[in-house]
Every structure is written in structure tokens, then in C-alpha cells.
Amino acid sequence: MKCQEIIERIEKRYPREYACDWDNPGLLAGDREQEVDTVYIALDATDEVIEAAVSSGAQLLLTHHPMIFSGIKSVTADDYTGRRLIRLIRAGLSYYAMHTNYDVLGMAELAAGMLDLTDTQVLEEVRDGEGIGRTGRLSAPMTLEACAQLVKERFSLPNVKIFGDLNKMVTTAAISPGSGKSMARPALEAGVDVLISGDIDHHTGIDMADCGMAVIDAGHYGIEHIYIEDMRKFLERELPALKICTAPIRQPFQVI
Image (cartoon, rainbow, N blue to C red; front, side, top):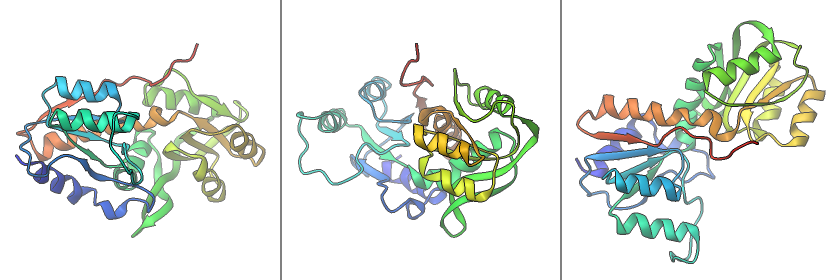
């Protein structure tokens, strides 16, 4: 199967026009005419991921985060992006990323479903009523601590960071996988009790807590790793002839 055939199937479900203006999804390296029988799926195109993809015999690497966000003037071994691109091309490995178009059309609703949120609505619209994040009602009122434990359990996390009173009762939540600082004000304006996201900085966390909205920081990777399994299922369903390999779920940092 040609690389372009796989891309067309992906973009039929997750059109690139639903990506945010600043984003850079699509085929970032490689040949659309390349024959592909094995796909490797990961969240990021790290050195480790690229080597694993090469070792798996894959001809296509599929990630959530684009390795290239803006124009580059040279591709050399002088920097990590250049080294990675050189390794991909030398190995005959095409590279495709699907980022905020997947966030808008897949990730947000999937994450909300994993927390059993009901009456979900888009947190911030991007296009045609679709957008980043979801708000909804929790399955039952619970303390902020219990909500944090639920997040840890459903997303298989070792820890989360919490801003707010652990004994506070929460009934509504907003979830925005990835980096959620920009979603804090929309969540506050939506009137939810707690925002669940990642990459929440100190000032945003304490300011939101003072405004009456708790924050659970589950990490950028912590929620978004669900992309890997979701895309595996998608490709196995849509293109069963392909062999699908996936990166192991492993936090990119350690807390000691």
C-alpha cells in the first residue's frame, strides 16, 4: 500500500483544515509513493522512537506532535531536528504528524469519555462547531481528591499535580489534553469546577484556584498518550492489511 493511500484514509477522518493556524500537521518527510506495510505509532519523534521504528521494519512513522513546527533553512547534523530528519530519510522512513486536527476531532471527546463526562460541549471552537477541549458533568459529585484519583486511574498515571482544596466538591469538569494554560480562562468562563489538563504553570494554577476553579495537572504526555492506542485501533479497523507497531507508554520524565 502506498504512503499516500494511508494519508488519505487518515485525512478523511481527521482533515488537516481542522488544525489550528499555528500548527504543522501532514507529511513532514518522505515519499508519498513509498510502499508501506508497517506503521510505527508514537506521541513524539524522539531519537528513541525513530530507532524503534527503524528496528521494527516500519516504512511510515506516525506521531501526534510534529517534529517541525516552522520553516527550517537547512537540514544538517548540527542540530537535533536535522539529525532526526537525516536518520529518517537514510532509513527510508516517511514521517507523518497529526496534531491539533486530531485534538479537535478525536482526542478531546476520547479523553472526556475516559472520565465518563456527560452532556459534553466544546471548550473552545476551532471550526464548524468542533474545537479544543470538552466540558461536561462528572458521573457523580466527588471531592477534588477523588477526581484526581479518577484521573490517575483512567489515564494510568503515577501522579498528578493539584491546585485547590482537596475536600472541595466538584460536579463539572473541563478536560483539555496537552498543554492547557490557554484553556484556563475558557474553562473558568464556562463555570466548571475543575480543569484537567497539562503544563499548568505556577501562576495559572494559583490564580484559577483563587477564582474558585480547581486545576488537575495530569501532564502533557499524561493524557495525550491515549493517541497511540486510539490510532492503532483506527488503522487496524480501516487498513487491516497493515502491520501496526506502537511505542510503549512511558512517562518522558521521572519524579524522585
